[in-house]
Amino acid sequence: MEKETIIFLHGIVGNKNAFKKEIAKLKEQYHCICYDLYDVHEVGLSLTVLIERLSHQYKKAKLKKAHLCALSFGSLIAVAFAKKYPDMVESITVVGGYCCQVPSRFYTNVTTMLEKKDQIDYEEWVCEYARLLNPNVDSIAEDSEAIFIQYAKQVHPVVLEKLIRMQLEFDSKTALAGLTMPVLWVMGEYDELYKGTLSHLKTQIPHVEYHEIQRAGHVAHIHQPELFMLLFQTFLRKGHHSKIA
Image 1 (cartoon, rainbow, N blue to C red):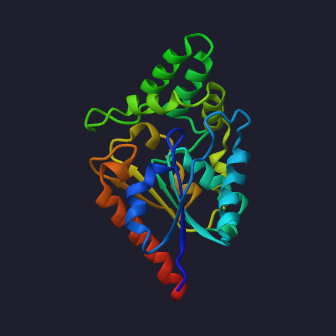
Image 2 (spheres, one colour):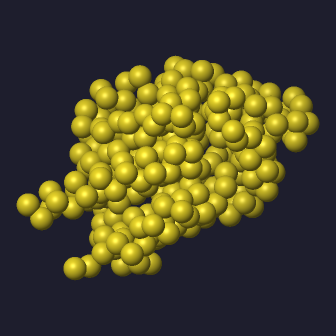
């Protein structure tokens, strides 16, 4: 029997290694694809470009359908792609995902930082953005601000601003409405900033399977890998069994 395919999408900064441990565990059972969402100097970047780049992964691998697994910002691409090409998406799994254009502390903080961008030194701005958009709490033994800053400084300032603006411009409500493929949405217990955008998630996707992992932050698959893999593999098997039936 031919393997099903999972395409993994990383966050707003970082690279294709975001799910490397999960891929190592799944590669015997699934065909796993990961790629860098953009070039760090790609000043012509747009959400349309990101959607079509994902489409290219299908064409390159000669896929008709695949599961999508997305971290944080990658969820915007996954949802937008599924809206445009619903027949190409077997399921969507989201880790640390969020909804855009929703009144929330996240939306307010992003707006504030974009307004301040030209008022202070760029490196200072990146550091302040990292602090204000830090999704974790002291309970997580991880310096997520430093991690963000490390990767953000590798990205051209124009590219980073475009990525951040996409979070204000993307219409999550419209994109989520009408999606019928299975959706697994996983958040960490301490990921309060991004959970604050999800108050209407169940209304927008009534069939969503939502889980919060205890003692985990924004990257719940890293903070609690065994629990995440249990949820993810169980979810994937559900879809497999329903197709056999």
